[in-house]
Image (cartoon, rainbow, N blue to C red):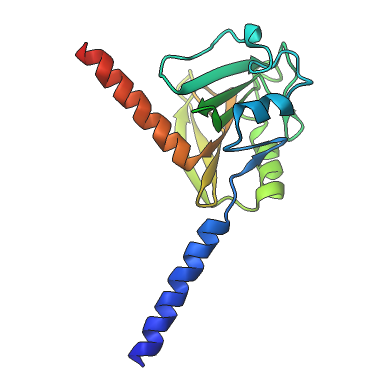
Length: 203
């Protein structure tokens, strides 16, 4: 009996390990988390104002940490959409020239000052259609400028190697954000930032 239990546990561990090994990083339209910066540039070669294709188009370049690169493409210069919703901007981050984070920012203030987070449901449906139901959903409170309390919500998709975060309100009541991240490289990037800051503080 003990041997049977041990075998069952071993098989379960192997199955879990195999599932993690089989998991692939999430795909973002034409891009895949973990791809090289050259692959990203090739995927966006038709976007003349993309910040990687055309560095001169980037007003927010961040090369403050060696080995890390980040840049932002503005929707007013280069049309950007996700789930048929127009994005205000797209931030991409690279660690050792590999894509580890993509952030889409959606602003609703210009669409309607009375509707808060109107794109959240549409974006959640688009993500669910592509990646299945969220792994986690977290509710929280956010206050308006008048002091009224509204419900904020963050939906997460996790597959063991990468994460998608959809936040209804980010910073204010008019900003909705989707973040795609590659877990291992994001952790490495955070470590590099901390090491760089510590080194500079000691100088």
